[in-house]
Image 1 (cartoon, rainbow, N blue to C red):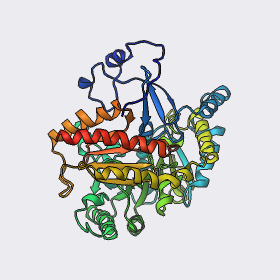
Image 2 (cartoon, one colour; image 1 turned 120 degrees about the vertical axis):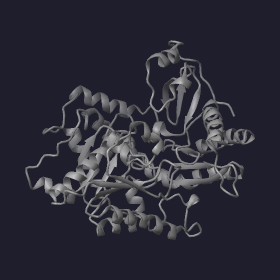
Image 3 (cartoon, one colour; image 1 turned 30 degrees about the vertical axis):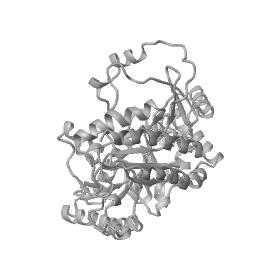
Image 4 (cartoon, rainbow, N blue to C red; image 1 turned 120 degrees about the horizontal axis):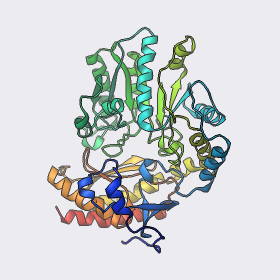
Length: 462
C-alpha cells in the first residue's frame, strides 16, 4: 500500500541537510541519520505531510499527545487571543486568569479530592515535581526518612535525573549514571509474559500488586514515600491492569502510609476514553501527573494534581515548596488547554473513544493471523503489538534480529508506506499505536493494511 501525495510545497530542498548539520534530534542515532531526516511541514486531522507533499497517517498522535487531531484553528486562535491580552507572567507568588480557570476546571473533574494544581511544562517535569512534593510532604508530616520511590520494570517516567531514576529501563539510564538514589523497580502487568499465574489473569494481578508490598517491606515502610504507576503502562507495549490490581495497590499504599502517584502523562484526556485513567480503573491517587493531551500538544503544558491530604501541611504553615519553573502555567498554554477541553467536550471525544475502542482492537486483532504477531493489547486508542519469532513458544528476537527486523526494516517500511507509529524494543519488540482520538474505522483499516504489508515482509527476513 503506498501513501498518497500532494504537490510539494514551496520551500528549501535542503531542509533535511540543514537538520543534519544543526539539529540535535531527540532519541536519535545521529550517525545513522545523516541527511535522511524526514521534515514534516503541516498537519490536518489524523494526517501529516512532509516537505515533498507525501502524506502520512499519524498513528502515534505525534507522541501520544495530539488528541483532537492536527490543524484545529480554534486552538491556534485561543493562543493568539491570549498572547494579545497577556503574553506572559510567572506563577511565582502571582496568578493569571487562564491558570486559575484551568486549575479550577481540572480540580472539578479529577477523582476524589485532587483539588490543587501545580503547573509544569512537561510530563517529565510533572513526575519530578510529584517526587519532590512527596518528600517534602513527609518531612512536614514528621516522617523525614520516607523518600524512596517504587515503580515498575520497563516503565518510562521521563528523562530528567529524578524522573529517569524512577524509569525502569536500564538501557536509557546507563549513560547517565550515577542517578538519583532511592528507587526500586517491581514486575509490571504484562500478562502475555506472566512469570506466574499465566492461566489466571486476576491471580496474576494479585501477585503483581503483592510485589509492591514486598518491595515496601524490603526497603522498610518508614523509607518509602511513593509508588508511581501508569494506568496502562506504555513501554513494553500497553500493559493493561488486571482486575483488582489497583484496588490492591491502593490498600498496600494505605497500609504503609505510601503515596500513590498515577502517572497519566499519556493516559489522561481521552487516551483511554476518560478524562483520567484512574477514573476508568476506579482507583484514587494521592498525586496525578499529566501533560501531552492537556493541550493536545498545541502548547507545552503539564501539571500535578494534588490531594487535599498532601496540601494540608503546606497550607497550615508558612512552609514554601521551593520548586517551580519559568514557563510552568504559561498564560498561552493554559488558554490552549482550556480551549482544548472545550473542544473535547463539544465533540464528545471521550464517548467517541469508548464507542470505537472495540472496533480498533478487533481491526488490529486481524493481524494475529500473521506468524510474527504474538499479542495485541491495550485499551481506548492505545495499543501495542508484540512481535515474536515463534508464536507457540513466544520466543522473541535476539539483539541482531531486533536490529535487522525492527529497526532496519519495520520502522522504515511503516513510514515509507505512510504510517507514522513506533517500533520499540526497549522491552520486547513491539509496535505502538496511539492515534488522534478523532480516528474511525477508515484510519483503523488503513493502519491494519500498512502493518500487514510491512510485517509480512518482515517475517520473510527471519
